[in-house]
Length: 211
Length: 211
Image (cartoon, rainbow over all chains, first blue to last red; front, side):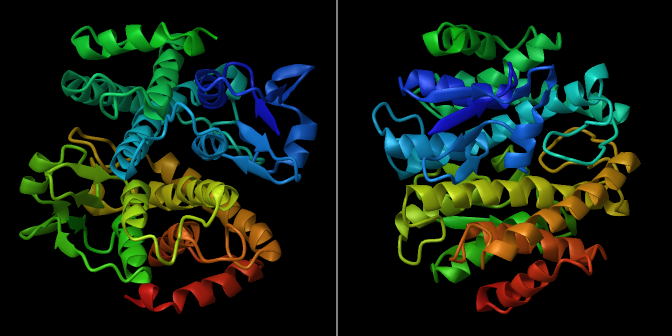
């Protein structure tokens, strides 16, 4: 098996943190173009038409894309230290919070990043082989969504140590990657979100997050 | 347990088709405002601050949101006739194709719908209690994405009977709901996508899809 990643992008980072948390020994290959690391390599795009990372290449030549699908597959092979839940209800809550962290957090920052960064002109969305124009209003909407995301998880983290409950899970990994991505864009955790700050400090200190 | 839905919206429909496929006997409640069915009821929004449907209310008062999380939880309780895979690899492929159908299909149509329909002025995204302005460029981008989606799944369905492989799965349910939603917006399956048409006719004839 081989895990393809791309620089410091948040979605492959979700897989890298997961692999580190579970101490899975796996081949990791960088998918960027060596001459132009802001692009995926031509070879990668020809091989994997979804043009997104992370991606897991299996020993039989098949492949699995999408961070959550990649990590859930690895969890099935390496069940120790579960990050997708110990029973059906916990698994459902982790899946729900992971999707909310992805949809309301990660996608919101991506909307800001992809629609403003000069290196992503014509590449407003990941995964497309056609021109996707940047939309400045969408970057503004992303900031609005992100503010709501911080407040929403702050309410949740007022009642729970971690996003999906009392154990660290894949949902926390997704939210951490979303927030680090947002900090890299100078979009900071709002002053009043004390629970997010407490949680963020704790999860950032995990060896898997330090990398 | 109770399953909350909302008129003919595609995400709750994913759950309704899943429940019908598996013949699960479950209480279903409409979450719309009886006086204004284009809105979720005030009671629903107060009870479930995520303001999205479907939602599963458990007997202990906890709740699970997000269609995929709701259905996966139900599959754990009712394992017969699995729609999320019979082994780890099948489960990973279903998860991957479900996410691609959601991200590239369902979200693309939603971008068109939410950013053009007169009843959704100020409600450009589901799940927000703040004004989300409509963005006309985003509706155009949604059409572009949708075209790519049809072509991408056509290539896939040239090699496979169903999206994730040789069995009908939750990924097919998501793609079906995305396409029916798109047809309702007069965004039709491109003429050259013969594999999508063959697959669409087959899945549309399933009793669960007829409803």
